[in-house]
Image 1 (cartoon, rainbow, N blue to C red):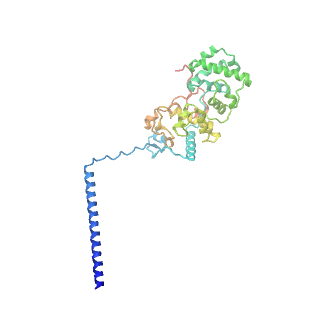
Image 2: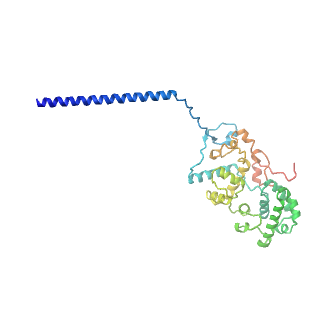
Image 3: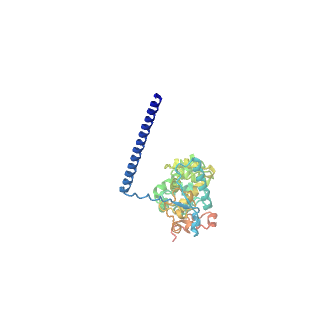
Length: 339
């Protein structure tokens, strides 16, 4: 009888436990239903949100030159090189230089000269004016003063009159007469072939010195002019703004033997296609490699109209350009005073 009583008690206890569990389950179900109903109500009353507009991706043609011929090439997304590794940057920079070498195989200094003296004088005169204007002015200067000795002894007023078309003619007259005197007094009338000597000459900085070293003496140097500065920053090769720091940063990306030709390629591209205000992106041969693609005109036909010099069918900047330039279809510039 005692066992039966215990059994009855256990059965009652089990029933109570089951009843309690069922009650809890029912409460949870009711709570869930209420929550679902509330969410549905809120969703119904909340204003509809517009889906965000798809972000437009700027793309560049695989070969912009193909677009100029009227064909529609495959397109490839241009990714800005943010977070680009050092190795990737070096590879991209060198590839751009190789592409430009194919576009401008005849690239050369765009100042007329026949010897180092003429080149250093012409480069000093090219500050804040075009190479074309210098080339149109120097024939008269070198005809009257062919040597450093002649220019060192010149009457400043007569030199000023010749250099007037170049702008800032008084300051430039002082510089070219001063550097001529320095050449005569310190270097025996010869242009030195060392950077440390060239930069001592009046009006000669590192940029001018590297133009002379690279093109008159065959010694590698990077010419950081305004075109070079603009393009290497546009291509995100460097974020530096100081010319000396730009020179160091770019020099570290290329072997020294490439420096002089690299300078020509970049400067030529800046003058002909990648202009400061209206770059001709739709006619650019390196568009797929450029993180700034789209800053300028991307329509091929409109971009083609922005091309300058021989790329646009116009004369170049030299009155007496190298034969390779003429063989490539380049046209010599007209002399000063020509129509």
